[in-house]
Length: 148
Image (tube, rainbow, N blue to C red; front, side):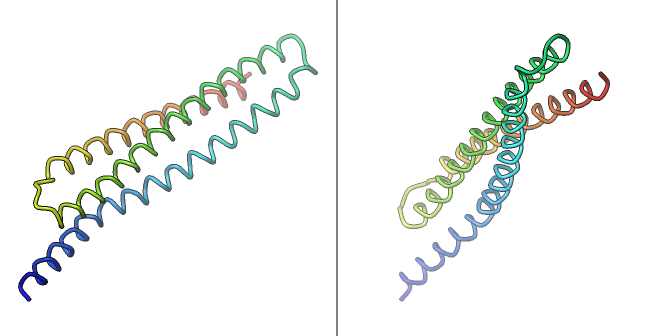
């Protein structure tokens, strides 16, 4: 019976260690959802401008072309942010799997788990930086449109 108690303790500890990364996965999923919304709006705006572009000339057309360039940058930033968010989520999933594996295998997996956590947070940080840059571009484009 003591062997069973040991496994139950190990499994319980692994579950406790996996709870925080699961909350991180929830946050990353919410962030990806927000990024998807921003991507959809930027793509819709780009399509609308591309449809209208042929009907305008002169300064209005130049303004629309400039906005299309900003939209292209925004779309690229959102895609990078999403890629980093997905990478972060995948590494968290590997982290959880490794933590559970560590409960059953006689290996010291503390360092790999720590490295995965650092990689996940680094990817999440890159995601947030790209997201923030996209938001700034969006606000600057709106200000320019209202000032003009």
